[in-house]
Length: 158
Image 1 (tube, rainbow, N blue to C red):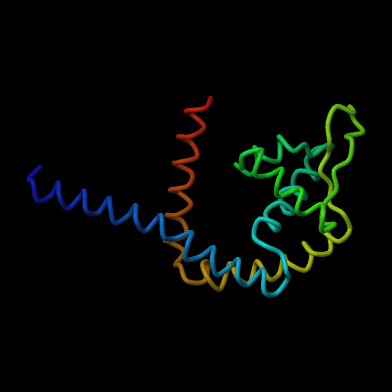
Image 2 (cartoon, rainbow, N blue to C red):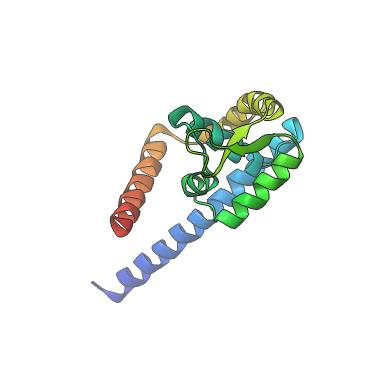
């Protein structure tokens, strides 16, 4: 391969990496701004409420360690976030009735109401700042990229 092609490929790779790094900053900032201004929930609040709801539908107990693994958050970060949310009445930690070995994270009624109100706001913002801007081909390419990286990660850890 000629040197010019190597430099171009390296430049393309740097450009793609920089675009990947900017993308969450551009999109997430706008979605978080919409969510907080319209619902009072931060993006981490919304992410936790959503994950707790999804996990509770799948299993009896929502343990902090399982929630951290699902969210790809360090346990310490999640514990601090849960503490803030518990003080605001959005979630509660209760002994897991199934085995009594640990605490179960549950949505408190205010958390359930906040999530119900935030869902449509979040969805509209995701469409406005991301989905509606991309073609079906771009969405398919992005999905394919994520699946490739997820398979690689699974192969490394399994």
